Image 1 (cartoon, rainbow, N blue to C red):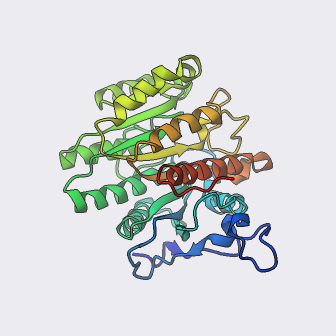
Image 2: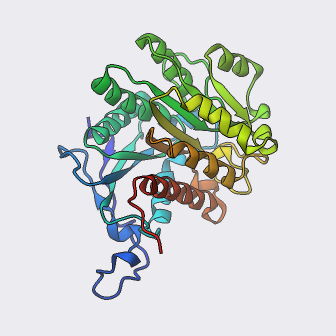
Image 3: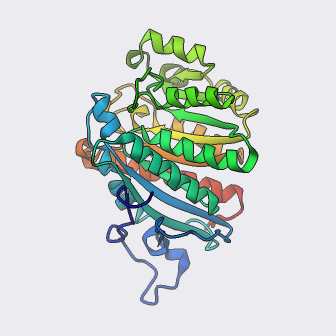
Length: 341
């Protein structure tokens, strides 16, 4: 499974500033590149025994975007995001572990095989007791990630009970024949939920009317999906949005969060497949993201469609860095594993 589509982490990327002195023992001055460790998925993973462990995993794939006729370039997103992450401060306790589990690749156009490999990788990370932080690639990343999470929960509980909170300008509920693309994965998940006799729990924040057909709005209603338009998020009071979020999250035991970088306004995220001039402000997304993380229900996170090829001044990769930092920092804080000045 982890042979031709898996690459171990390239630790040449993990370089950066060192403020911890010649001895290198002042943890308060550590940055991520000094703390992160390699994790090779080709080897049997022991159960993680620390307080909290995070595993970065890249999905280096443009195939879904290519099929969806979007701007390709997101396959190099995971490496660019890692370069940005390297200098982040270790704001968490030394009882927290960071791992780089390498990349899943798709160089032959066989998307389903790469998604299946991602599914197995996420399952392995969950079985080891680690929290997956997955970096796309196209947003077809979500299918493999979700399946890996669902596999783990079905093995553990007999059913997944897994809700999806998606920050995205697009529903990604388009019909598909055979293999999907970067616009079909949540429809694929909905169909699989039906096959398993499970409920499709899906809430999408940031939908753009100009980027979704009327048929997609009808499909969302037929599938029981919840959504908020980008324009409504900008105009409505926080209390109203938080109420909708809470109403969605309350009955769901487990929550998977996915962010497509095209949910943000293109002034903040120019390096995406489908830029959105009137997308969301990052502070809005961070506010609702942190609210969801504080439920203690979130089991995995991914961010997709960061495309260095179109990224002016690395703005989008840097934004992805800030979001991943917020995920780690928030989860550590609610577990009492953060460090503050």
